[in-house]
Amino acid sequence: MQAEALAFELGERGALLSGHFRLSSGRHSDRFIQKFRILEDPALVTPLAAALAERVAPFRPTIVVSAAVGGIVLGYETARQLGNKAIFIEKETGAPALRRGFVLTPSDRAFVVEDVVTTGGSVHEVLDVVRWHGAQAVAVGVIVRREPIDFGVPTFALLDLPVVSYDAADCPQCMHGEPITEPGSRYLR
Image (cartoon, rainbow, N blue to C red; front, side):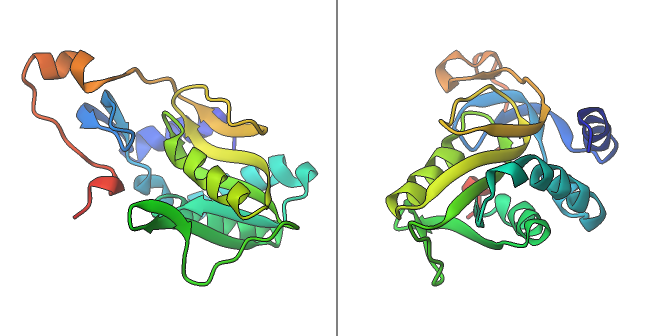
């Protein structure tokens, strides 16, 4: 899928929100990408995953690893198209970990998949777990990259969509007393 087509789909599906948001990174922004307007539709996830699979194929991944919750659907479909297994990292006592019997070995060549990246915190957590288990991270693939980030491996973004974000102390909307919304899965109770 081309970047222009993805940007169009984000707009058409109401995935680009305006307001005052606390991102999963803790930073504040006046724009939020509601990725589940995209991930809820298999007819759209399939070409997104195909685009990521095509870009990473030369790196010969043997497994796709994503972060729970947002990366699971995309990770699974990307793995299916590559003919690989898909696993995900989730929190255990507050720290990212492999659970549910998932295994990574030193022979694994991991493609790390994420939906939307701002600071890269979730991707760095997944990369740390991959490397801790002795596997090799060969690349990172994301649907939308809000800020350029160096993960130390080739990174593929289907859409670069720069969005300004602020530390809470520097947020203009906070300074004006605007109420904040916490739409990300890290704030689910």
